[in-house]
Image 1 (cartoon, rainbow, N blue to C red):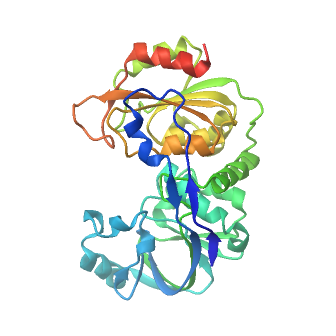
Image 2 (image 1 turned 30 degrees about the vertical axis):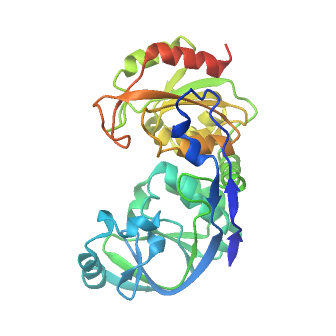
Image 3 (image 1 turned 90 degrees about the vertical axis):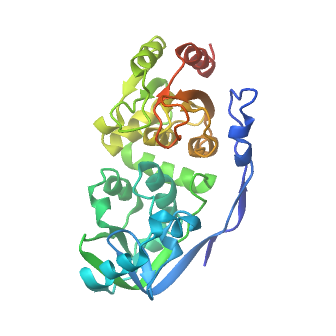
Length: 339
């Protein structure tokens, strides 16, 4: 069953695109979004690790991208299958069930932008199904609060030592490849969550900086200087981990300006009013992680960026701490604020 036809996504260029930086973004300026389908699977095993398998084979729907099925993270198939077929309690699951996750969905961004979008396109149909999730999702603070907005009848977590044989499993494919977005779908998710948590998209005005200072990686190494500079422009410092999911929705919905470095906290731009502005502090060589650039475009936000040197020269953008040039930051903030 086709849920969405093939489409083309065309994000807007950054508002402050610098000469020489086009190469960071140009490959994202026209993306074909494959059609999304609702797959009906019979007698499929679902593991507590979050994998689907049948006939001794892990199914491609378990992964965010097909290549992940064959890289190092998907090796050790014999050990995996032995663990799931022999060492875990096997249970038959007779009710109709829905599955919306892959091996990346436990992250805050990927839960909101990739998993909930899959639920959104089957939200009416899914109310008669049981939503199955791996055991780790029960401990994620954002999962059950965000599901409240969708009216799911029942959520069942697969226990750590369990594996379910699902008689009828309904799997919506991705509405867009991870890092890209269908505008109608992602904004539909946004509207449901704002309605559930009382977000005020008409107020705006706040200026917030979301800190990754407590994270294990991808921190700003000179954050004290960054915070001091932003406070000159009346920015308020937020640590996302200090706030419930609903509070994060409400805070972002009242913000007209958001600054942060690349990380989960930036996902909250989804709840900002249309026309608000975002400044992403990003690794100077990163042309892969453009998910917030594309999200800003479909959410009708003004996207600004600043490239930053890694603390350790040559370190990959997925792990590197960044050093922010404060003079450049102040100049960019003035651009964001229209000063």
